[in-house]
Length: 563
Image (cartoon, rainbow, N blue to C red; front, side):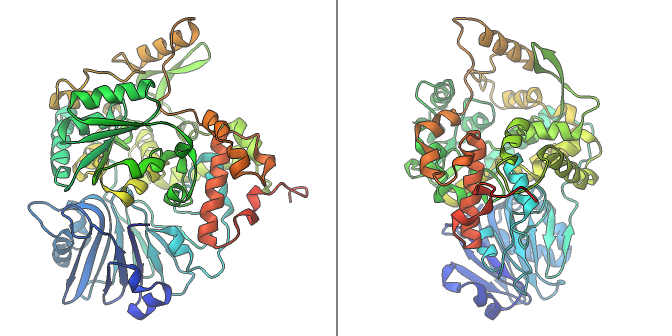
């Protein structure tokens, strides 16, 4: 990877047992931990920073801002931590990972941002605790790595490994909103729902404006991954973006809509045709899945070389934080299809809701289970896994609807989208702004809606809905669903197109069964999405476990009855 943080609870000699300091732009040796950081933009305002004092050091890796006119966020945090301790973190803003080690504290600590938008992996297998941002690099310090059955099955059936697990038994993740120390893991209280009454629209508008102004300071030519939907257009409307990028055929509704938005705000636009680069799970894509989430979500990966900008913006997770993506909606049955009514379900079933939000397919999982060397009922397995994960997050929420969203944020499947961008560009993550997270935690779920978000956006830019998303021509969810149904059922009326290219068509068109799964004919009948998960896991584990890819068991046809 272009950017990496790797550390060990120990001195520089201990560090060199696992990695050469020559691999990093800077190596900092403190009283209890040594950390290396590789980042060509180290020291750029709003980005990775380091500071070394007489009694220790601080590293901030990723996107980070401190209050006021602060030139070095790492020094600001180092000084403030001396008097405030962990309370100093409450004012830090961005998508980051922190390593802080000073003699006056209780030892080195590693801290994620409140929503764990930047993962930290660790293992104790090698003796001293080793940690880092690249799970494959941390995993290679494990002497005899063991496949984690539950982690593998969650990934294959749900597209995401839940909680703190990975696909390797000895490799773990730092939990959401927590800190890692030499011999402990402590949960923090920054991400906890405390709803109250205030002017939700006005506050969201004010905070969006401040968050965007702050992120305008990143230097260089600016681009945005642009859809025809709602979330990226607020970025385009407020920042001096030179070019928007969209994956899709020139005639696709999504591309035509994005092109109109770019023209509206004076930006250029580039559409990338959905050729084999869109799906191909190669080294440029799979490594950013971290072995726990689908590389499918990294839609843009194959086209990165053609993106001639220094800074890249995106609207990832705006639907989750501002528009209630993971809340359970009340629905009505219309011709066999569940249509949302635009209000919350008064008595949601957490397991059913999360299965739906994660895109679980019972039929596909049954097919997959028949091809795996594990005697596991997939339906019972995923239900138990989600129930356990939901309960583990329940203490952070005041009600079931907020607990659903907390669980979704802690296990967001699409974060590899940001992982990849942040390794290639200065990449801002708008949804992780501290003030916007605070708005999310204080706003009741019935007010975290598309209507609230759009009213806030319109108060910032009254012309932001000049061009509506092609599949959402109306103001209400129900009317959009009804029109979509009518279009599907009426001859000579064109249907709304999905925003992303058809993966089944592309998988067949580029002969990926033969090219990628030639030795696994027994899985060729699976849906393309599940085959892509198999390939992701095969290739990522091959990197981490340093074993021959084709020897991994889930790609072998069962030879004997399942034990």
